[in-house]
Image (cartoon, rainbow, N blue to C red):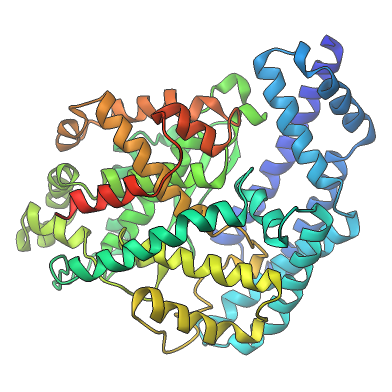
Length: 491
């Protein structure tokens, strides 16, 4: 048994190195790679995906994992989690033919490059052939993976293990109805019209970098760069990088993008170091990962206590803005409730509605209820129904996100689940740490980070998302704490 475990962990270590290399290629593509390298980069990443796929399904490794899994009751708790989750990944991978994996990877890369070119020109028609192929292959992927109720379940489970479209939809759609009603009662009261004073990208970088470091992001293990679509990526041990986007006419956009991605990075850097490269040092689900970013972005950085700390940062980095507002006005500026078209610019009240629209549409696409050519109209109709707004073009409508152009169907619901997880976690954190927000005023965020390290980060993939939230709060996942949090905040 000991020899089998040694070989098991050696193989995981090698696989993790390959995943990190792939992440590095993706990070470079988003930051410093010249545009002329896009076509060959797609080929490089497809070759690497084939190597990873073959490495994941190496016969000796798979046989060893199957053998360890058969004796899982004899393993330690940590080893059992690592074997169980590795077998889950293998079982998914071996259902996908190697040729399919390579073709899908290359198509994803080419499609994302085309999206970057097509979106500025509002050219949805040029994206249709790529999207049609991605939808077709995603439907085929669902068939390969298998499902009980509907094809969308197979794809959603990749991002939120154990979740189904039904149990996710049954919690998010009622939440959406309450949010739509809530917006009507608060959008005028919490609508702030004064525009931020412009701030240079260079100064925004300095401001954002200091905000990230203050909540626990270390220069030793991270860096901050800019890209079109902000995200976080982990390259290796003590190397989790965040990418933001600067808008000189709205510095708050980069501030909240940065804090959001810092939340992801803190989670990725918060696992126990001895578990690095194993499932015990990986996010439970994208919903739980999103809970970490949304908690720091909303419950913390949009709180009144944080506004007092943030105002002092403006006095340091943006004195022209600080002279024009006080802390109360800064809080209002950061909590402007107004239905809009762009998901990444949405306030925390309307954001979940953007996700529900996407969830409904992508499920309909995968189920075959609509086709790619129907997307703009369906998008507009649902935005009007849920948010009372309708896009005038596809650039700010169906083309605004890169997710579908990379074949990431089943991903979007995890953003909304993250909001629900975050609300429940923060509610419990305030019970455990009654003076938590008092510390925010002085820039003391360490107690919350330590609480998250203990209650969330250290567990890796030990639990499912719903099991974890039950362990933390004693309650089943529910949207009502999220609604209560919003009502209390904006009352």
